[in-house]
Length: 270
Length: 260
Image (cartoon, rainbow over all chains, first blue to last red; front, side, top):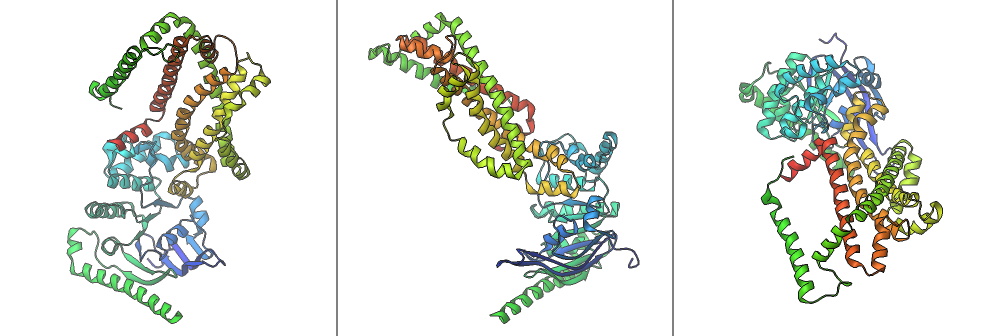
């Protein structure tokens, strides 16, 4: 796998907001990260660690202050123009004036794909997220979990090689969240899409990921990479596996260590 | 939308007839003079007697209100689109529009009469148009601008062109704001049309009719004209409500589920 071209390659990426001003914040500091095809990467860290910012930098939704961002070997802006990734936000961001089917068709319309093909793909994607019987419904007629599944179907509609997910299940209850975790893994297995997944839930990150990127705040940086060697396919049993708890503990300790080092730094300053 | 049963409207109906009964009874018991307040029965008789004149005056005035609203809305919408296209216009014109929105435009009626002619309906139409322009412009501009930021990020992730963002996000987003403006303007335009006629105009108009009948102490006739303008105002509002339900069912429905 290492010989393949990485899907995402970040080198020396810095993101400074309010550059030069008094309340300048270093959102990302010297980020180095290579993501291989087919990986499921979770970015985890406390709020303010820049995990959402990092996701947006990869998606060219914001430009980094400096550093090199490559997606499929191309600079991030070019990758965006080539529609190399699909995006899922914390809220479903469905268009309330469109039916479920037409929401999924939205990116396909922008890609100028003809009507028959759009319809076929929308059906296919909604089948994938098990919402086939809700094609003609409007978003407000669905539950929060169902809306988020529509958002996933929409992000996958043009079959992007990369899926960027910004705390997609953060607003859902625990039960719905675990069910969607299962579904997401099934979708990942079937589509072979590379996924970058932002979360602040340790168990969610361990359950889903093939690799976890632990981040720390002020300045936002990567403090540890943890390989999750739990075998796929994962299910309920995985969550009760001893190794699952060991890995969760490792992530938790890495998060603590990141916090502690920051506390140490600020003490030195005072 | 589900039709609500008779029981839902019962309190409204009861209040309506109770007010009429108290009005009628009060006028009779306290022997209130007709020029102060005619009884509903007297107004009703007048309403029937002069109905043909009322209806022709009302239609004339209504036509002025509708035409003025049409012109004002078109200009307001065009201005709203220019505000999102050109930052200079947004920063220069929008504060002015918001200030102009609080100006009692009706005060310009005599000037409009002077410009376009007292008996020329254009003077009334223009007053209505000017009244409508600013609320329409402000509301539509807000609808075009106040888009959920994540929707714009999503369109950016699709590498959508500004035109696609306008057509697929901003315009649909502005539709509820547009209908809101129409509702506000339906009332404003009728007020504008009638009050501008108070400053003079042809005989067969609601405003002139009301002032003249009042001047002649035919208050029952004046009241009858006021009632038909009230009915006209409500019908106009309902028409727009209906148009809204048909054009943007997704929005009306969300409102209903929120209420439930």
